[in-house]
Length: 480
Image (cartoon, rainbow, N blue to C red; front, side, top):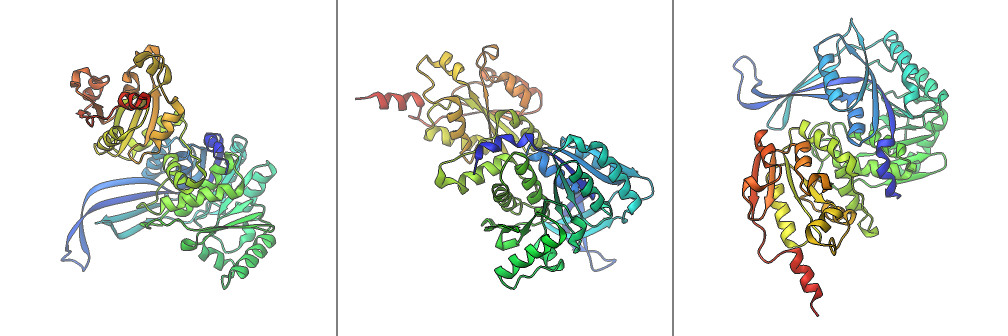
């Protein structure tokens, strides 16, 4: 697997077309039964609105740093406006088409004690006339993308999907389809389709044996004129099947919390990895890892490059390979975490030779919130602060070691002459909820403390572990 290609995620240009939805969640506690009917009373204390359906696929792509546009149908209503606002905050180029006579597809879930009590669906099926509006818009925006991903939830937006695929193929685009119809001929010309096992069976797939599964899959894609099928098989993992090859990928052994949206994560990750230049086999291998992460979360979840990095680190441990999120992409990921309501902790240092004191300190810092950002002095800054013989380890190597720690979510370098070797400007950019510094500082002496406090954050000073320092390690090494 060429991990260097993971630095090309932002080069993936993908247009998602399909059934967009607004997922609404009402959370509360239920402690008694209604006297009016034998149903629980839920006292609602929290509301959440999320992008659903094809919009969730686009969100997954954006979270993986892909450039993504979204085409879909919404009503001229409040739900459509809410969905537009969510998409804008997710850095998705929204191309939603409004229709006046039908509502935005919305699903409201009432959740109590992590259990879904009831789901209320507000939807009407869109017609071919509505789908024609998407086809017209598709022809206008197609040149801005290399991949077209159709997310079909059988709500009518893709009534003219065959015409859409032909338009995309004529323009030289790679086409991926998450299908819902049992008639695969509707997807003729697609490069990849991603049915689950149940959808495969409904389309005529046989699962009596591995050979019958392979043979029937090849027959189906051959008859429908589709290049390849990525079959998601639940606890049996995934299989990438074409007329010439078949690759099987075992399911990742993670505790399954919720399979909602896992298919969205799979096809989104596949598209981004192909857009980054990976081979189909490697792209599916990473999509399989992403699916394992997604199903360990509640609700329709997304996967970040940092999470993939850690999973890849475990998966490829025997090769010694490692992937680190490019520094330039980290600020966007921090912003996404803030949007999810996660508490951001910041600390900084040189971390030239990582030792037990560092590990303990970083774990304590992470415990102050949900995500830990480490500002890392660049090489020139360390030389100015500690002398020309330092650093021992260059920036990229120090960042790689730090990123491998479970307590560290992001590493960002700083230390230009203009910054006076302090992270003050970086702290102002990130605006963390908690600023942590190790040593015997007072709050007034800590760079960036004034900004954090002024914006309602906290500043904490932690003690270092006695006897542990990089200088001591270097001194021991130099002893004869």
